[in-house]
Length: 430
Image 1 (cartoon, helix red, strand yellow):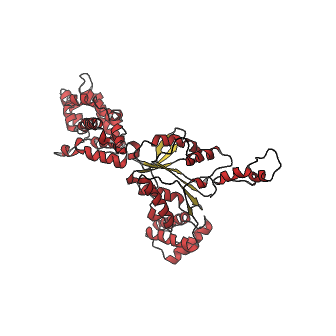
Image 2 (tube, helix red, strand yellow):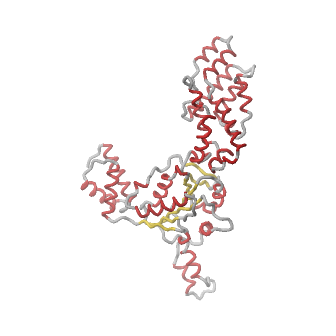
Image 3 (tube, helix red, strand yellow):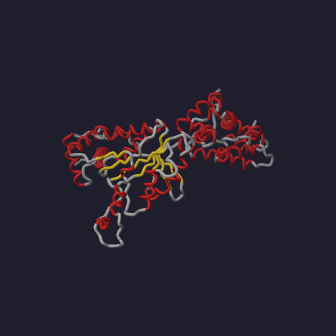
């Protein structure tokens, strides 16, 4: 049986990436050693335990579960076709994927007891080896008749649906990414902000506009890029992240692009344009110095060049400045100067700089809350956290906090509530 599995593994085509996975590779190497006459017991024991070591390192209880997860996150011609919803028209790819999954399933369902029996048979004359083999950990145990329920090919249709909903490769495992411009690659965010829209208080009109535009985008209709503009700490970035969290199940992914890599956005869009998922490119705290090259790069992206922006990509940016390019009084000298070195059409240059924000289809404005609004936010957050504190005391402390620190804003309110919650848990008293 094991020899046949070795031969079948070589016929894997679509899921061939799995053959290079460290655990799968170690497992196949273990089987190969069992079929090699001159392999020593030490080599085989080492190979057996290396598989278990990899499972423990990844905090996965069994080899079957490990392989199943590897199948779900594999990016190949089949999973990409499923993601884009075009696999139904390619029966050849579907059939090969089904054959691959049957082989992979057979590998994943090999019992440790069967492997141990092969080892005992191979080294039956070495009593001490048999004792050691018997004590080996079991990292692929199954209950009676469970194999049929776990068969990969029996899950083929549901697997296609899973790829369509969650995407292929790294996008099936993560919702937030950052762009590493040095390596020119997407880096998954391992601990994304779990913020949700219902935790953003007194921002109903802003949420309505942002949500409506995002739903238009997800429906396949052309939507607008959005500039989230306003005072610091008012929830601009949190709203973008909350939208990404809300629509993850509908295939939305968020990619933060640092300002210094804005000129690489064409590289990012070229990699994402053929995917079946939707992407928001997120630029946080957007502002430009005078005559900065990145300004020109963003302007070209917003206006569109020879290549049209892919329909599965939107741009959401936040800024504390209504005019994204800093303007100096010296820029206006050309309006009245007799200096021959000054630009003749200075007014045109000024207007070009000030109009960058207008190139976003929608601008959503965020304002710092008034005192009563700030206290309302504080009380809603306190209720959310089930804090045991009298409202009068809470309000008094909240006003003291904002005067000592960052002024009245939702961010200040959250920082204050976190402090009060920590005091309550630690048992601190005034």
